[in-house]
Image (cartoon, rainbow, N blue to C red; front, side, top):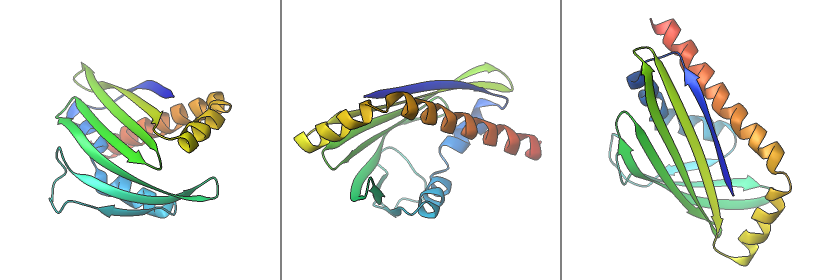
Length: 155
């Protein structure tokens, strides 16, 4: 199952990249939503190979996943591979500078089952794909708006 969207952001590519690689901020957001996030590596600055263990509840069951940065090419690319509960995922973020102060962000998420129970879970999610796609796009749009607002306040 794949989700993808793109947004144009009124901010320079370096600023947008700094925001998509603010992993401490994402960790805090996940903690506020009830997830347990543990950084696996002890490196100070996230780089290729940085990893996190995440535990959360989804559809009434405890879920665990491991997320690892597999590509970090500043300021244009970020790839995070996830694995857990029989589902492998790849999140890919690409940034393209449209002008000095405008950046296009393209985000895709692809999920693949590795077990029968994971296949059944993804099959049930496919029934709600339109709703999930809308929510995915809404989250990316909200992120883009937050980046624009913080850049304006900073400038």
